[in-house]
Image 1 (tube, rainbow, N blue to C red):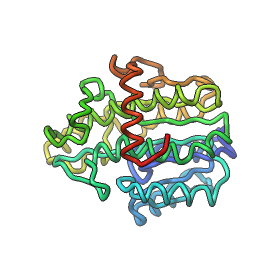
Image 2 (image 1 turned 45 degrees about the vertical axis):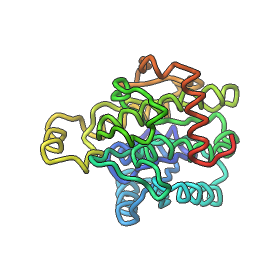
Image 3 (image 1 turned 180 degrees about the vertical axis):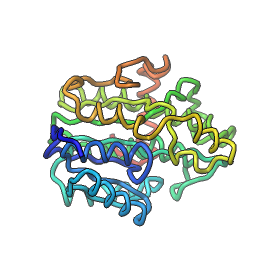
Image 4 (image 1 turned 30 degrees about the vertical axis):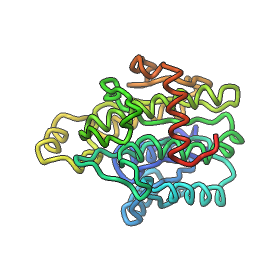
Length: 283
């Protein structure tokens, strides 16, 4: 149990928090005294994670809200439920992500990886913005991936209908998320809300649970632990060193460069509008 209680009284929401980086991030922030709200899809796994984090951290202020982030209705219900329980949100960590071998579509008729990895954080963040702004100084952290650097955005095939590949589509979704992160940062300038993206490293998580046995075995041997992957999100959520820093991309607790495409403001503006249309938000 940590003696550092620097996050005492701060409310932190973490999506995809029942395993991997999300769970380790939640544990780290709970140990620092934060009020941690876990967002999980599976009630059983979510409850187990909540109880484990409470026990390990010695912090009883760990809450659980259930939502399937592939469903826009579920995201809207989540935002309403959160606002009924809490009047502020100091830190939002959009961590939930998925990689799928085969192309699937969500209940909303959207390609699943793009829906969960980009549209879900876009929609959830926008729905919680009033509470986040009222909590300023506040922080939004989006878990991206270094894989975005090999991707190109094709507005004619954002749903990967013409061309689908598990990692290709994943990379595109993370490129989109990084572009959206920077666009949020520009739009929130002067509000006291910072928005940054993180490459957590090549981490051993449940993200690749849909992959074949060889890929899972390779991951288990060569990838870093989720605890290591949680270090940068925890740093961005809590450190006074990054107070006021926004629109940046971090890896290993250091600011670094994302791909050239992510700095294209016209691309980000166009993507923002498309995401708004796909999530039925009036922006």
